[in-house]
Image 1 (tube, helix red, strand yellow):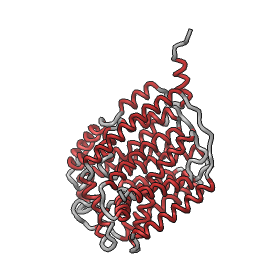
Image 2 (tube, rainbow, N blue to C red):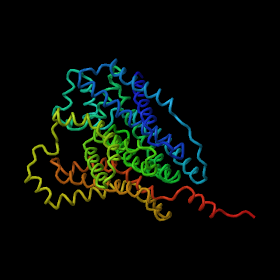
Image 3 (tube, helix red, strand yellow):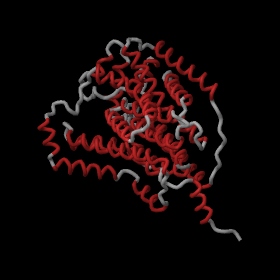
Image 4 (cartoon, helix red, strand yellow):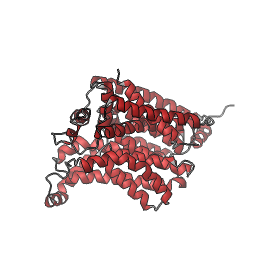
Length: 455
């Protein structure tokens, strides 16, 4: 179990980074702000440790003592600064209906988490991509002398994929001195838990506890999300970074300029998304474009870029210096691509696959909520809604465009990846939906109004 301490060190560093550069300063309720910090730290920690490890690897210093020296020094400095500047907040009132929903969500979370642990123990190596791509590349990255094989065109290794997940697993294996399957299992389950935490905590701060618990229950009701949580793929980590970036835009809109770190962390999460998977690069480009399209003040743009650019450095090194080949454009010609775009049969296959996959998502639950509860609009979030909606829609269109020109067999490509790419943006869509739900006071007012009177 020597891998647990390095894993805990990464999570601790991530939490301290978020606590020191707090995106939730002054946010209420207090439990939601604390949970958001913990959840954001759980996804920021692997990103930070992965970046440090990859930087040490490229300069020939990826040895256990150098890794520990850098990470422990950073964690120690952050801990000292946090202890000196931490503050307390008043507790938030408890409401009846949100409290009931919270109990239901926690019961479902415990049951789902326990089942995911059982499945992971029964299938410790994950699914195909975990073995052939993410964990195999992590083994390459543990070798200081031959780590550049990570971009060699071995069959099925996808050398153009970013290295955040593989680098984090390699770093933890390096510190553990072995290759235990527990490391990728913990990584996958940590991101799944962080996704739940980010959803409910962000919605609680944006809209209220009741809306937060509805959002959490929708995620727990999403069968594909539950299935892929144990596959050890990068799609759920990518979904975490997508949703965290958009949630931070809402938090920034609610806080105004009282906490400029929310915008910085939005940039960090979009940069880490780009370092997680190819789709994350598209997300970072669309988010940046739409953000700049609003012509924000330069000081706000600088905050976004200050977080994004450092997180992009490993990806820039991979793309520009290691020159990893891309599978999407390999062997393709302009005439061949245009022929695919003009083929109506491809549109039919893609549309049918999309409709078939969408039925696996709890849209009926969301439809019932829409009918029972009147949507509530908040002008403070107009900009965040606009950015998030266009970014999510742009991501969906980019997925469909890739299927249109893919060099792979289209039916096979659709059957093996459509549900996974939908998972990447599904939490973002749930966030956008649940921020329309009424606030807690409305739920309690209806509850008390409809309650039978006592004689």
